[in-house]
Length: 113
Image 1 (cartoon, helix red, strand yellow):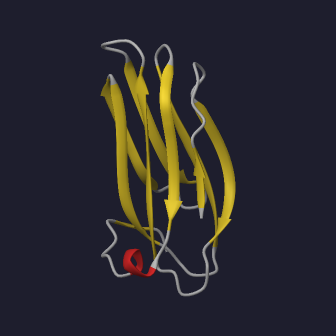
Image 2 (cartoon, rainbow, N blue to C red):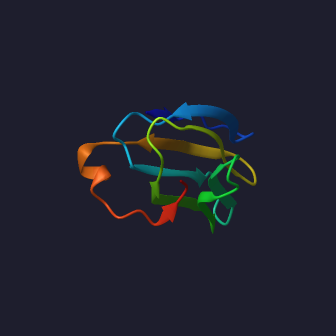
């Protein structure tokens, strides 16, 4: 549905709209980044601007990553903000939003109807 692998010393931040496909009730989301220096602080997050619900958020030393299953409304438009980065120079950053028949059968951990 959506993904990025952008990562550099400035990290990544973007806000965009997605339309949930018909018959999709659950999406799988995740993201992460690695720091290039030992002990470097890292963060990643994704949230829904309209509801204010956090879809995932993580902080860590050397790296940060998180995944979650989100209950969504079919055919609804969501405005999403994604951010990840590190204190100095991030590498291998990524984030994604996925759906499938298998994902649709999973009980969501965050409800954003």
